[in-house]
Image (cartoon, helix red, strand yellow):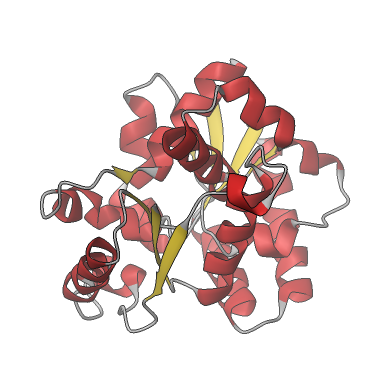
Length: 237
């Protein structure tokens, strides 16, 4: 059973569940993965905590983890990129494997033989904590992040998505994605689970360069839960 430590934010959690379902090679209800979800909306802001401006979210995330364990989860996914700053601390508290979103992205990059320069659209917390930079560097990839002014715009767009203003957010994020592409990034990771919600219908040349870590994490969860070969999951996706 896949446990989903969600609620960060709620719509991103629903989006992730849909991607798990769409990536599952199933012909009937019984072929799908059992999922249990804790939409832990009480988890304090992750970026604020990383920047030293908010409460520690770890106790609330650990409480949600315990609920998932008690519900019978045999694997856990966290559809929030910034929350992976606490991945190691959470994994140390449970024997249930917590699938790391950046490891899933790194595996996908290697499988598709993508170029070593990857653009990063993410929260200030994800960028500051080096969640992608450190793990991808271990696999031979370099992350290119927006400059300070552009990063402020990315954060504004993420807040707009959380407020339900996806159209306005899409304009901002599309512009910043194009800026990263102009800096030589052949692929750009939408490394905040709110960003794919805004850019799902983006109709620009840069759309082909966008990577969706939420979808890649969903594929990794399907493979882990069903032991499905990578090529079959990609055919479904």
